[in-house]
Amino acid sequence: MGRIRARFFDPEGTRYGLPTFWWQGAPDGYATRRQLAARGLRPGRQPIAAQILWQGVGGTRAAYLYRLDLARPKRPASAAQRRAIAAALRARRTCPTCRTICDYYIPRSLGECLTCADLR
Image (tube, rainbow, N blue to C red):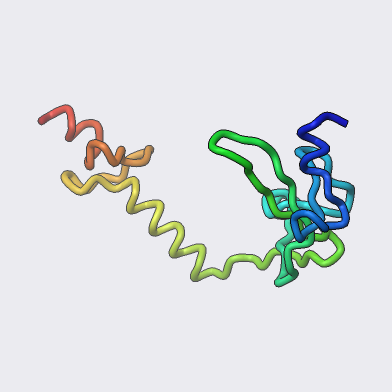
């Protein structure tokens, strides 16, 4: 085990307060929020069970882990939520100058569609 791995290996949690593992060194049964979301799960009010620490740009980075057996299924979005998301995404595609709905998101740097920006 290398120095960095040994530095971040604390499965009992005596040094860091939480069971701590190195990058890609967590045992099975734990997952990050993104890994849970990829499986269609959410933490579901469970406390952080462990953490992964690694040396990154700007210092030590951390990723929190949750237990898979306590994770709950994701709640599906309601019809009203889906309508609100669709309206927000449509507003990002609507040019404020010519009021056309584009096939792309309006660049924030221009503030209007590419056709209107070319005319200026």
